[in-house]
Length: 418
Image (tube, rainbow, N blue to C red; front, side):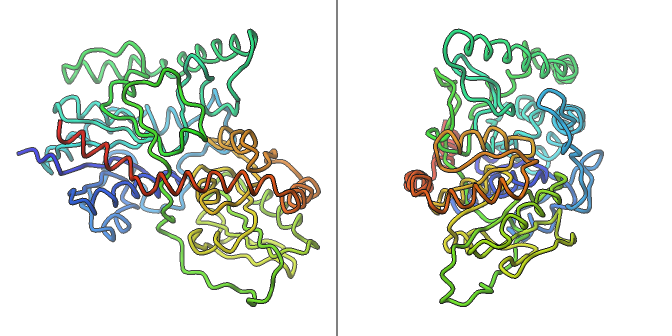
């Protein structure tokens, strides 16, 4: 018998998505929901440690090592990204089949799908159970008042700006709809009505949870009926280890934390440029490498300490500035501590995030190829100009207030009662 409080999460390890998606799962578990996860074999240890049930994918997404670069998207462009073919839509048939099997086997009454695996939503349609899609970053779809995501663009202004956004929206939908025929073949096999557009998968979900602040984002207006801005999840990644402050308590030099992607984005050169930028400055530099870079060797001066990982929850309260690849989770955890940012976006949603940081004057957006001199000037500017800190603190208040409301859990509870 289907149990309305039994929830299946469908996800894979894409780096920043895991703290956000699993953070939501953990919050639901605290409210009495029974959580089961369908994911890659490499995720079983983490999922089991949380006390959740686990089912591995068997025909695709079969990594046993989380460090393996499965995305291979570090040299891609917004309109030519292997993630769409390799992750989101290519394995659609396998994802739907695996999701259906897990739903039936575990008497699931609610499906929560990571936006990286959108086709899984169709399995809930087959069984006529509620379906929720989770976006761990700001709005991705275009709208009447905004361009598509992943391009690093602000909404266009004036006639030409709005025309640009309209044309880009058509291109965006055309790229997505290359997968429409494949999805409709799967839907036909399960006696589901055809989609008119791939984005219908998202719009037809019962809930679309966007895990950021509406004020940080540029929301679609008018808002789609299923959209809820829930605020970010601030959980540390599961793989971080305890951190001990290597500097004496009386060392009052500003602390600059460097936190780039936990997955491979060919970031070694950028890390070294940041280290060189810190060289000679009257600051303390803490460079966290993450899983992708933890075995790499860098040349660091005396004022820089390099560690494999450090929980943001422990480090950011002591920091004065964060230098990042502009992953959404890192940005939100920095702003939750009132910290300004230097962003060096490398791909994925990072260009959008970095543009928003600069737009809200919480930090500076630099190109990933910026040299040490450019990065050094940005460090000095942010440490000297109080405006960036002041704007970050304004977001800190909003983020912490959203965390107290726990909007995502409340919305899912409502859905289970309908």
